[in-house]
Length: 416
Image 1 (cartoon, helix red, strand yellow):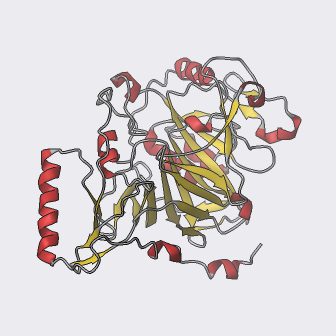
Image 2 (cartoon, one colour; image 1 turned 90 degrees about the horizontal axis):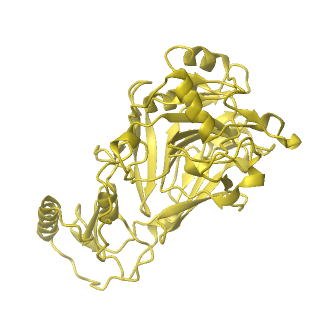
């Protein structure tokens, strides 16, 4: 492992050199449209947006100031209900689904038996941060889960609780750090290790990583305790139609013709971000990679070692208390959105756990629809949700679907 001094030498988060060099041949090479033409184009775009036209004729990258032409993208299917999840932004069948109970489950990621996790593919939002000694852990947020097995379940940290708070979820964990346990005892819906609603698996090698629950157990707990539904304050989201219109498809054969409004000069540049590296600045076994799949418009998640991050996808039925490997199938995690959020982090006073600042602001990198947007995150209080803004100060709406939020220490890095 590199010493702390060498880690700090990599403090700036960076964009890989070849990102700036992805130059495509300009079919109008040598042409230099005047800035007035650019503003005319922008005016036309505004009219098109006001008319609600869905043809994918133009894409505006607010971060870079580029405007690009794209082939037409199909409109969203007519089966879209117009009712959207506050957790993921995807279309739901009914209003009742919007306020269904949510569960925030502390899920380990260690190499001591925690992997592969079960049911993690069903989580709508997943926060990943270092829990201790360079090892990352997840706060996985579920609504309307159906998985026959969910877990393992591990202990709570204060920063995970503070990220969980706006989702109005039941905090599901197995004990935790003293400050987290004190905080969760005041005003939260709380389920700590409880064998009425959890069970221990039989695999001996899991040891502390063999505590599981099920969707049926969670529903019973919610009913038994009278917790009711959840009033989720989620991230700002695009609708499915808006997301389709903003999508950059990296498989398109046509070259992108892009005008840089600030100079009025023609340039050719692809704003796509296909390969993403998230480095937490500690143990390399917990650094991750995301590779954009244009066909599915998602990001296949792997570890830096090259192994895919597979999890157990379990049947949507109550199978009783089972070990996941006996009833589930392996599948690779592939979220629709990846957010890298730079946080202020240091070792806690015990020199083992972490202390992460959650309220405030910092750099952020939003990867969605094949694009990268550099901006900032902002969280005004524990109760308020995180908001994301581009470099011009405009709020960024996230695409619908599963979202991974990576809390990257200031001594880590994000490369794309």
